[in-house]
Length: 171
Image (cartoon, rainbow, N blue to C red; front, side, top):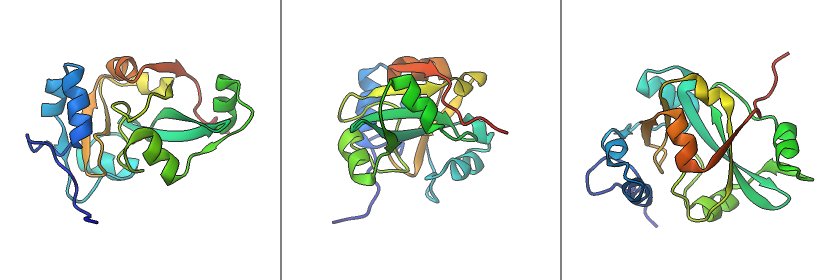
């Protein structure tokens, strides 16, 4: 098994499946603005530092299991997801973080590189409203080394996300 990072034909650094999803959605200009960082953008802090943006401009794609079904939650990089708020929003009995196997099975991508759309399977998507505070947010492009910029409203549309309040409340 190799550990190389797959890249698309244009050299954007986006995962080939995600690059194809962007093309299918008519988002070639987003693919062209995808940036690759060899040192990695696995965490929101790493991504913000590499891009030179605010931590809150990073869109984290987090997979949870709600009553055994995968759910994607999009959260700004400075925030934390309140699992109880997710549970209430979904009307679920139990909600917890999905393990690496479930993340890969549901999305087709590894933790640290999960994009907000272009997944292997269709899942329910919740997006915290905090993402809407920015003109542009940055999200993973299918690998832990590539990110792409997108307007948050466009992000929600293409992800099929419902805008909700699931950010952990601060004391």
